[in-house]
Image 1 (cartoon, rainbow, N blue to C red):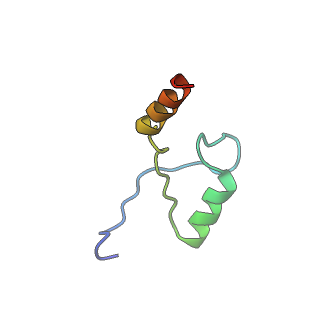
Image 2 (spheres, helix red, strand yellow):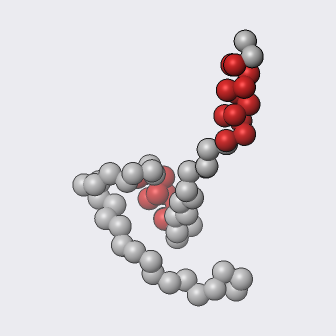
Length: 62
């Protein structure tokens, strides 16, 4: 915790199921909160433009 610093409250989330969470499973969030005391949500991975470009190039050569 020393390297992390002092925890600070960021927001309150109602987890009673009345509203859906957009990019997270409610049960996984509840489980992480009860086991770890926090839930870390990372942004979705960015699109791999090189992979997309190579796939398009492969399609054009056929």
